[in-house]
Each structure stands twice: as structure tokens, then as C-alpha cells.
Image (cartoon, rainbow, N blue to C red):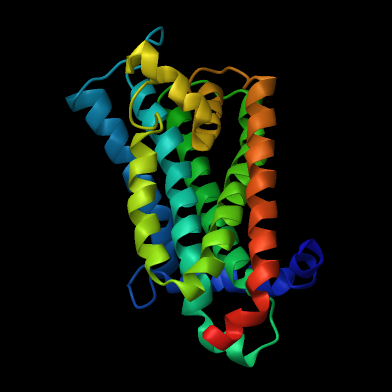
Length: 261
């Protein structure tokens, strides 16, 4: 699979860029909406939770810290969700191309992953700028976001690959996954602090793969702390497991995919 991803890297990149352009095709501002939309989201959160519903984080004096906490979780989660949901439907959506072109199936999912990652990169740069404007401190730890976010997206790639193949045979999978993702979000401390959860429930977070990614982002961006070695081990492990699982499912069912489509 890795060899095919490398061989088709230009095809993946060009289609990912085309996807970003086509998202707002026909609108006056066009591709600029890829910048405007996340910027407005960040500014709205910052204004509401800094000026209207003033929320504070324990041990942090900054009025905008909670807004930063929200954005540090919501923006990556949005990209992860986009990767999983659109990736799951990628084979069905691109059925015409799969029937006519000898392009490996996972290439169409990979271009969704890259498109989401590029948009996420823009969003995180905007968040960095807003944090600086609000007087926040940017440290060299922020550089760790690059491998961290790549791991998170690759984790999503593995999930999308697994369910994307299954979705070819059982089309309800895509609908079911949308509901599951919503539940998963609320089981992850993205819009709330993990400390507010009763002690007897906090251990559940340890069995939630997404928790380790989101908690690491919060540590780096909000609390200026390094994720523990355990964080990195878990994130790398679940990413490898998801990719291997996706590869095995694709290998098992590949011969039937184009016929069913």
C-alpha cells in the first residue's frame, strides 16, 4: 500500500487541491472560504468565551485560554471527522473512476485525508496567530503538533479505509458511522475538561483512542506541557493498528469491490 501511495503521490496531491477548490466552487470568494471559515470559527469562540460567557481554565489567567482549549480540540476533531466520514464514502462517490481507471482503491481515500490535513494546517496556523494576538505564549512545543496531527489523520485514514471498503457492500455503514462519530466526540474531552468528569468514569478515557490525541494537543497548545511517552506510544499504536486493519480488509475484499460498484 505504501508503494502505491508513493507512486500516485502527484495524483493524490492534485486531487486534494482540486477538492479544496471545489468545496466552494461558484461562490464569490471561492477558495478563500477555506481560510475565512476556520478563522471565523476561532474568532467566534474567542469572543463568546472571553467576553460574553467568560470561562476560565484552572491555573491560567488568560481570558482567552478556554477558547483556545476549545479550538485546540474542535479543529483537529473536525478534520478527523471529515477524513473518516468522507473517506468512508470515497469509494462509492468515485465509483465511476474506479470502474474506468486502474487506480488503487485507497488512493481515493488518501486524497480525502490529504485535503482534510491541508485545511487543518491552515486552521492551526490561524489559531496560532490568534493566540499570539491575544498575548498567548508560543513555544517550540508547537512544532510537535505536526507529527501529532499527522498521526491523528493517519488514524482516521485507517478507520476510513476499513469502513470505506465495507461501505461498498453495506451502504448503511456511512450513515451509522456519522451517528457513532457524534457519540464519540462527547465521550472525548473536547468541549469540556476531563477533570469535571466523576473520578470513577475518568478511567474510561484511557480506553478511548481519540482521548490521547486530543489530550496531547491540549497539553501542547494550552498548558505548554509535553505529552508523556505513554501518549506517544498509544497514539502510534492505535494508528498502526487502524492502518493494518484497513489494509487487511482491503486486501480481503479488493477483488469484489469494482464488481459491486
